[in-house]
Length: 412
Ligand SMILES: Cc1cc2nc3c(=O)[nH]c(=O)nc-3n(C[C@H](O)[C@H](O)[C@H](O)COP(=O)(O)OP(=O)(O)OC[C@H]3O[C@@H](n4cnc5c(N)ncnc54)[C@H](O)[C@@H]3O)c2cc1C
Image (cartoon, rainbow, N blue to C red; front, side, top):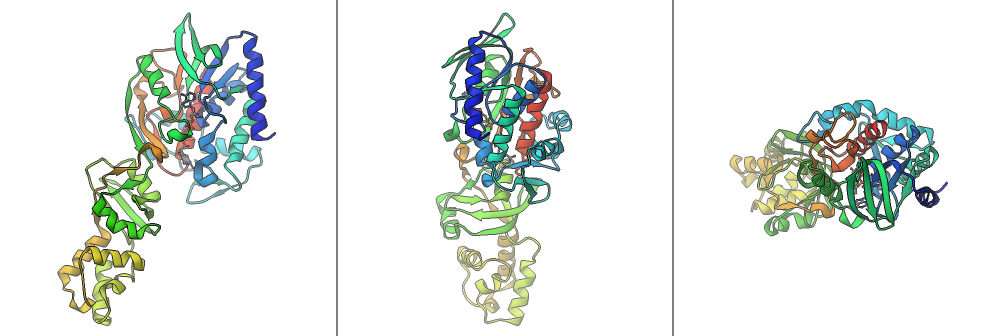
């Protein structure tokens, strides 16, 4: 059945079931990766589950992820790939629902996939295949989905969660909050999950945009703007953290996988150190050029190890003129520094508008790492990105969504 038909079918069934006045075993807020997985796992166990979401269609972030191919997991996912105030919190859920478990599900639906960079698995065809698979699983397990539903308020009384919505009220023994982070508000991201956490006395750690391009000041932009669209293999460092992946110059600053990765660790006001030509020795190369080709202009010598456009921009920025033979050792060392240890202090990030994830969120100290249930509020669960667990780039965020969703789905 198509994604659209599945959306409509589960929606209609949800209305039918609700009008019978029943109490759900669980209402899940958010039909993203985590909410759908929790719904599937719980419904397979015979639980009466209703997923509510204000968006028109389910799994919108899955659909746009991985450039439309969804990097749906990473075979090497482990605790070291996640940022959290409580770094070991994710271990239990990740062990109980592994990348191979998700891969088995993908294979059982005959969805073609391939491994891109080591461990990163993408759909061969379309990210939509993952959404269709999840909706089909939910439908088959008997879980219900109601899209286009505004959540107006939550009350907890008489042992039940009362969810007031724009389409009536729902009662449930358990409430699972899977409303994601603040990234890409245009796609329906809201802070609802954080508000619910606070309402029930759970702490919410400060949030900020992660896996996001870094932006430059006007003077820095004048250097980078002419390079917009150029990408190089780079090593990008902040403190003890280093990533070697592609770096892309943009009109606003820097992007590309290495920059998105470091953005989650970067702290405002501090420099990021970039090696624009890892695996090469700029100083040696320039000294050799000075001997073998003294009349060569410096930009041409530098373009032995860097793209021409970038070499030229660096030479201009450093105010260097003339032939390579005219440049002393001190100047060549300065160039070596500019290539291998370029220190740049971004003015900020592009923010939630383009961020792939939100760092921070519901403090894990308030949750059980096995079930995702709030320690002090039986029946209340938080899963996925709303929780203070954020993956690096490379399929780790979806793996967290599947694993935390499955943990709650098994427990409620
Ligand atoms: C452009 C982009 C590309 C990405 N690519 C990848 C990738 O390839 N691999 C990877 O691992 N991760 C990727 N991510 C990250 C990944 O999409 C998220 O980490 C993941 O979707 C989080 O799942 P979730 O279920 O917690 O939240 P979400 O998927 O964000 O789902 C939350 C749901 O809650 C609903 N909701 C929110 N507020 C309300 C409200 N007030 N009322 C009712 N419903 C509400 C939303 O409509 C949404 O359906 C990408 C993210 C972006 C933005």
